[in-house]
Length: 204
Image (cartoon, rainbow, N blue to C red; front, top):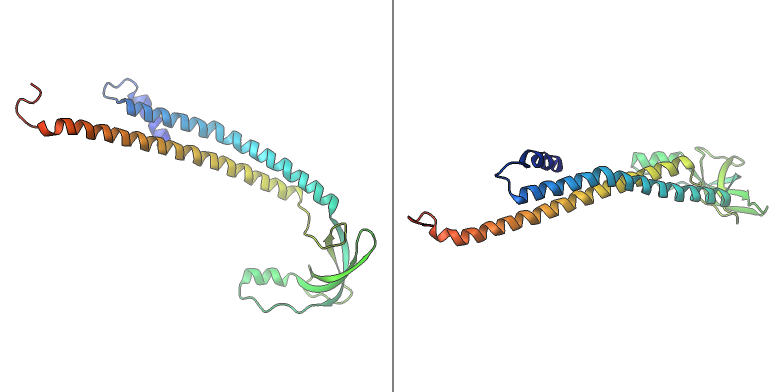
């Protein structure tokens, strides 16, 4: 890692009479960047993960209170769409079937609609679990705590990586500007000394 190499250079050059101020400045920039990556990135990751976890856990509780699992009954099977050549999508499709089914809402009202059933070969009268809301409308399965925890961990990891990338990008930008200024000073010095370079008696 460039930051580590720069810090190593800082330690070696701290008493070297040939060192330039820009060398020390670049090393100090690398040291600050490394400390931010080591300290700030994990802290940001933990905080982001904790906040995401709390928000997702509240979503889990809300969905569990608003969604209900009922038993639906197959009335008839619906024709499947044309075959898909993609093995991944075709496998997922084969594990589910489109059917017309009936079920009851929490208030006891009967519903009938076309839904997707987790049945390979549905027949009239077969039953399957179905998630609905308080009005009896079909909804997705509520989020569980395991999935919420996984999403929170990924959010925390992503935040830490983002901070690391931001710090490293800032360090590279600062060093790039320092190098450009160094080259600009060299050009100015050469413009002054260049015309007399190699002439006898120059500087005498």
